Length: 207
Image 1: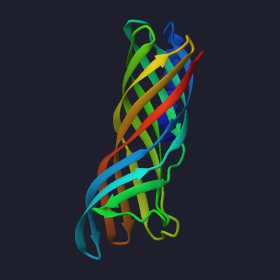
Image 2 (image 1 turned 90 degrees about the horizontal axis):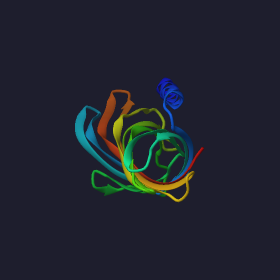
Image 3 (image 1 turned 60 degrees about the vertical axis):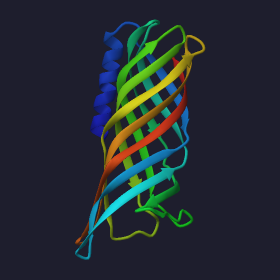
Image 4 (image 1 turned 30 degrees about the horizontal axis):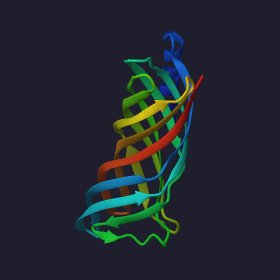
């Protein structure tokens, strides 16, 4: 994960130096929810079973770094990193049964790298990008003996934004990424695949 992030940041800064009009931006925002939809199979004491997770996690503040080269009435290059806080579960269903969120539940954290394009009119713009999620999960307090493996992959970003000055923009986007989640406890195991998604309202400042 660290190697991927380091490589991406190096590419961004290289792009900044070789392209004219590329601007560095700082982002602060709030993501109101985080949706996890997974399904899979497992084995418990030799008995196979199927799984379906529909989980909603609460809000998270986010910060990030952007490198953009966008001009009026044209498509332009956009890229960046969005770093999220850890999220607690708000509600959910496992195999159709409600999750009791008054007891300790697992916590998710997913940050996003994105690379794509944006079309800008006078002040409004529409960003469209490919994303890559970097996730970690903190098992529920008291959960012992189970090994958790998580892997997040590619997804998409789409939204709209508005430059209310040359340097400041406000933006609302939706982001997604694929996810694989595996639990192992001795001979018992469970493997799930699906996707996560998280909207983001943010303020950008470009130098």
